[in-house]
Image 1: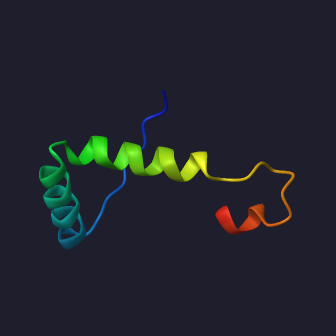
Image 2: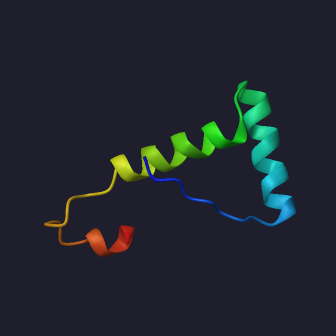
Length: 54
């Protein structure tokens, strides 16, 4: 699995941490799920409007 590191402003990181705590998970796991959901919903390269997702 590829590992990606994203640096966020402190305010954004705090909101993500708070949301993760409320959901009973870690911020890392929350972001993994959000990105996985977004990638899953991306159309294939044959779609006319796939440029919107890139």
